[in-house]
Image 1 (cartoon, one colour):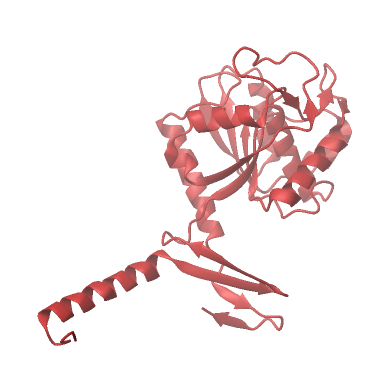
Image 2 (image 1 turned 120 degrees about the vertical axis):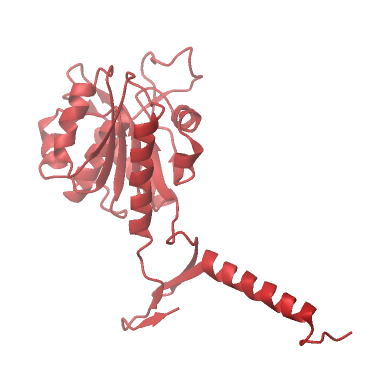
Length: 277
């Protein structure tokens, strides 16, 4: 049976096909880039090429990757989570004392490094930095870091230490950090390595009104260029969003997605010629 292209049915079918083609073209673009022998393709949505922001999540002291996963995914709305690709891992050292979350979350518990009462001397600190870098090499690339408590202190410092060329030298530049209940290191050597120059990567800082680290988290803001601050009424915890905080977070994430999507869709050859797709 042959279709008469001049018939009303044929015209309708042609219109439907063309509409589908336009929808596919608008919703999906293929980005290819060639670097040496490497060719890769990436599917990008129609919303300005938006993609999820990939963050390595560093948990709090004597907790675990599973615990921070439950905290974040259990409290943050889908409108935020759908913009993030979160990767969770355990710190390298088993818990060496009582955990504050015993009876709330199941063990095992881990810690990133050990420290004295004044938080000015650290044990296994270099091993911790090497562990994080090795994990990022193996499971990356990552756009940035999300940290809570001890993990937040690390995340903020790592951004500065990387910018100063003293940490994470084998992984791509950190583009953003999400700091929840953070603070600065107090060891003078680490201070010089991490905060000697303004930290220019994008940053979001959650400050709790009842958080015992609020004063220290506020002090940390001075080390970042144009930090976004989201305040909440709770203590030292990963908070839920109120309306204002949610609006600020979504605006921040959408801005970051837009910046990442500005990469041109092109093939770069060895001679730097550009061919538009």
